[in-house]
Image (tube, rainbow, N blue to C red; front, top):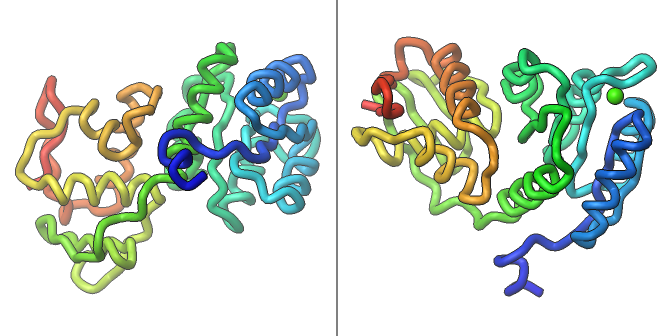
Length: 232
Ligand code: CA
C-alpha cells in the first residue's frame, strides 16, 4: 500500500456540494470510477455538516448554491477550520482570483461547463499533491529582505511574520530555492503545483500578484517579459 501510494493516491471520501443533481450525479459517476466514495450535499449548510462528519479527502464546491451560504462562504468557513483540499466550480471567470487568493485559498477551480474527465484528472492531481513527500529539511532562506522559514513555513520581513496562503508560501519557497534563475510559468507550475497539474499559467500570475501585494518592496521579484519570473 505504501508503495502504491507513491504512484497513485489512495481513494477516499469526496464531498460534492452542488445543488444541480445532474451535475452532482455526473461528478459522482466519474469519481466512483476512480474508487472514491462520494457524499453529495445540495446546500452549503449540508456541505459543512458533511465535511465535519465525513473527514473527506477533498471537497468539490459549487459557488452558486441555494440557501444562506454560497460556495465562497462555505469555502471560507471550511478553510478556517481545516486544510482539506477544495476544488471550486465556478461559472464566471472573474471569480477565479478570489477563489485562489488568500481570501478563500481554494486549491483549484474548474469553470463550468467542464468535462467530467477533466474534473476527475484535477482531483487526482490535487490528491497526489496532498500526498506528496514531506518538505526537505528545515532551513531559512533569504530572498532580498524576505526570510523564508521552510521549517515553520513562515515568511518574515525583518522579524515580522507575513501571513501567506499555503500555495503562496510554496511559490515563495520555490522562487527562493531558485533565486537568481529565470523561471517560466510552466516551471513554476511543475515545481509548486506538481507535474500532474492541469491548471493554466494564469494561476501563477494570481499567486505572484498576491505575494507582491503582501510582501511589497521587500520582495525583489522581477517579471521577465515573455518568459516568467526571477527572484533576485
Ligand atoms: Ca449551483
